[in-house]
Image (cartoon, rainbow, N blue to C red; front, side, top):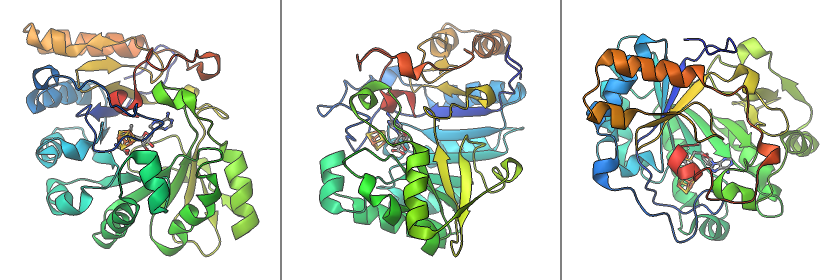
Length: 330
Ligand code: SAM
Ligand code: SF4
């Protein structure tokens, strides 16, 4: 499925819940957000229906996200269902990792192809300060467990200037010792993220080279070799490392011209771009009894209306305007 700028749209991010067991300060307000009523969240059948329509239009990879996807009951069941859809090649998940140990067996049995685990600090006190809960050690264990169980694993860190950016070396070293890719994500001015100053990928790379020596850039065709979701990361290798180091530089090196994704929110709204609130209300359509053809048309309309790119740098400071990242799914 191509959008009007000729971009191939083959990747769907599905947020299965707006709820989360953490309160990362750059993602959710401290007091949380008013949770959406259960009846207003798409059922697994509705998600499956949208996914099947999207697969028929060329979506090949799906990322399950949230909120925290593992706080929704039976996420593994949904993954199994999505894997059964003809045309879907990979179903992966992004998680804060806290419930990974509990669910890893059923997720693997369901056919999960890979996992991105978010970990911004290895220091327990700092983790508590950032997320409102203890868990750094637990998440680290979850990362090790995922690699032991053979799940393709990536670690995502969002460096915050003056808060955890002194740990980029320690986080990167996970890719030295474990078979994981570690990716550094630039803070995006979405929701609470507007209130924080991130670090540019090139700044982080410089710091890593000062510690680990020269990094070797992977050629772009190798970038998706091990990738579980056709993402926008640029990858590098350091000598002696088992895994790769990636950078998702949405601000300093926008990748909009290669963007291949649309996002389904937990409330059933299909968004063509992280920044804009435009899109199609698929839940309303489905609950009004639309046909598959009508649903397909709505998906095509959304893709056709995909903006050429974000304009993060001209954003206002009003965090509530475009919605919180936990609601959109990152
Ligand atoms: N709860 C899961 C997790 O933390 O991985 C999935 C949802 S979370 C919204 C997905 C990713 O978005 C996480 O890696 C998180 O660090 C990242 N994220 C949240 N707010 C962000 C922001 N303003 N800029 C950049 N990344 C952000
Ligand atoms: Fe929850 Fe993930 Fe947002 Fe943290 S980043 S508050 S874990 S949704």
